[in-house]
Length: 186
Image (cartoon, rainbow, N blue to C red):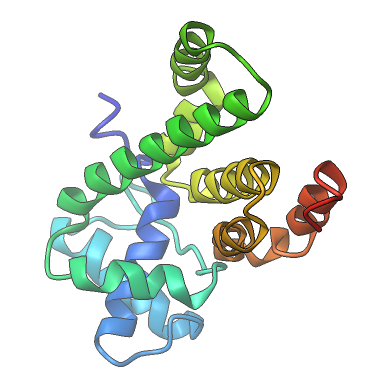
């Protein structure tokens, strides 16, 4: 039922539509063009109309252009084929980020494995994966930056931290958090 739920991958679908529009030379920040693209991708093929439970309401594309750019090569496939790949990659990013943070906190390997499993099975992770959000990449960027700064690799940590720019609203705050957590690396 979850796979066929009308809201499955809702945020991802906005990202995929933006990538599709960009792949055809359009501007993913042009809401009119994006609305037409979303309609063509999600409602028109099934003749779904307003009021139908499966109707996909317009979602603007609020992320940085690099997310659309990264998804462009996959726009030749249907969104239903790409969404599980995207979801698996987000789940992997959460697991990797959890591993790095727990490593940084000094958890022994056995406890770290359990912690990663518990983190990836948490309700917030389910919600993020189900909706198709990219916060997993922000989490991974933050975790990798903190871990690498702690290991004495501030440049590599800074490069990892660029992942937070996928969600520009977090792009300023998280570098400050890493600087506060690892002042010697800042």
